[in-house]
Length: 271
Image (cartoon, rainbow, N blue to C red):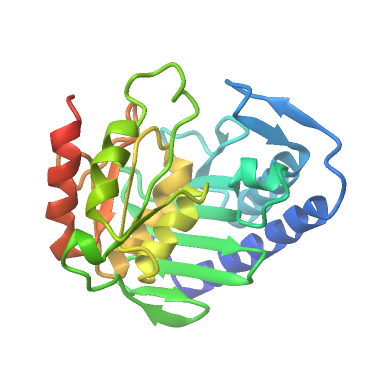
């Protein structure tokens, strides 16, 4: 499957509609929260309503694809025969959402059968910002081309990261990496949405990003955005072929800063 402008426009409209669902719920009293794997990993009704809209629409528009959503199992064509795969995060930044913090998004990523990102859309309904990319055609913010930043040293850089839900029980909890970066950078940010963190690297707001415990629906769209914006995305060992099972580790930045970030990560991480 080769994505085109029409497919991108369909995906953007879908992300906007899903964003409207999120905003509708965001403006109402939060009536119900359920726990997934951990009391910190909460699910709201908005997650499910947004994903239901996305899955129904994608199934109708692209029946030969397989859909992998955060809140549900595989949907659509059998993965053994599907032409491509959609990775759907209907609400990235759930904890922010549930606490009334207006920093969350819809993330939709299309990959080929080998997991290579082909199309990505990240939509922030609070700001109306649309981050979009098609493989080989550049990255855009509201139809304007964007590129990664040009910082060359950590001391002038703003980096972002996050902490997995198992951080209280797993000694591999990103705290050593956070502590190692802290004295070397201009600033560290923990905003609570991996998809938006990646989008912010793609448009130069953040100079770099690293994290562990990511799932493919968290990152597929953002990985393509960063690469199309001229950035580099690898795992902690510098491999550009990414595996999200089981570690889900990413290091993301511009070509000059990437090696510097990898060195810091390697010094504090043992496989």
